[in-house]
Image (cartoon, rainbow, N blue to C red; front, side, top):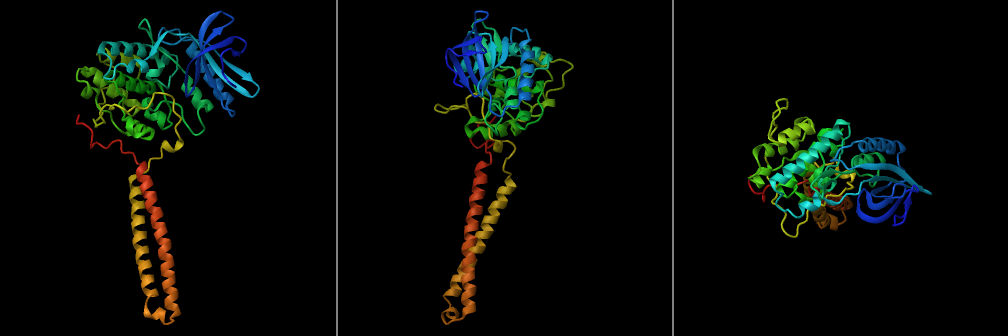
Amino acid sequence: MRLQAGLELVGRYRLAELLGRGGMGEVWRGLDSRLGRTVAVKVLPLTAGVDDSGVARFRREAEIAAGLTHPGITTVFDIDEHREGQDQLLFLVMELMKGRDLHKVLSEWPNGLPLTQVTDLAAQTLEALSAAHEQGVVHRDIKPANLFLLDGGRLKVCDFGIARLADATKITATGSIAGTPLYMAPEQIEGRPVDVRTDLYSFGCVLYELLTGRPWVDTSAGVGSILYQHIGQAPVPPQALRPEIPDHLDALIRDLLAKQPEQRPDSAAATAECLAGHQASSEPAHHHLPTTRLAPPAQQGTSPLPPTEAALPDSIIGRRPSLWSIWLMSLLAVVVLITSVISLVNGLVQDRSHLCQYGNSSTCNSAGLEVFWGVIGLALGVVFAIAAIWRYSRYPRASDTSQHPPV
């Protein structure tokens, strides 16, 4: 089904102008012909093999989110499906907002936003997340592009439930996952259950970027390396990049970015208290992560991974080539190559010997076999060597600190 201006969904919502397009669908300015008001319509095309139960779960969660009457959460007016023949669309009708998302705001502050503004935006985000979490709604895709700053200074959290829809309905390509690599929690990457602390990890990634102007992960090594960093590498403390960051804020971010959910603050409300510099007595002690070295901010001409939904092949998730397998493959290649060369040389020597030249058939046959197996062995050795090189090329080297500044 082709989306175009003038298309009317379920006989009520007329699409007027395309506002944006991403991996999860398109956003249109539309008109609610029944109520005569301008709205934003997010259209999500579904695959042919869509799971109806997954769509139903998303609708229930979206309805709960739509029932959240909080000024920091985008108002959802309607959720419905539109069908034309075999084509099926799921769409959400939302309030049309005027302003910019934080991804666009960040583009104007390469070294981070002013501390007071960061604290204000973070507090508004946590207030909205707390309201959603109290109703059992987990966002699953907190990122700057989903945090919308209205012209008057109010921040709104957008797209509740969209990531759940992608997981449930395979809205992304087959063999992929929904989410944004720069802001995904380790449990999301590994396919473990998520809860409110998953949102807090993503919020920690956003807070780090708001303060420093850069993601905490090294974006120069590709998507696979970004995922490995989330799972197994500790971030450079933001205070090392921006010394004026207060101690309690630096500690809070490192707590939010803990690899294990139980090491993070247990709620958005508790995080808000830490943000204000008041450590609640009921909270566990900070679990400071060991520091590592990370690449300096991107130089001119280097563009970080854009914060859009990404389709990630299953081969990236959980299939990290182990170092021992690379060594084993290299050892096999060396042994096979050496053995083959010896066999090939020995066969050629025998073939040129006087015994073979004077008709000793057994010696000639033996020489021929050694040459044959020597050639086969060389071919196998080359295959093993190529395999070892290929596996080594896939081994992540994001933790290589040879060019990283000390912290």
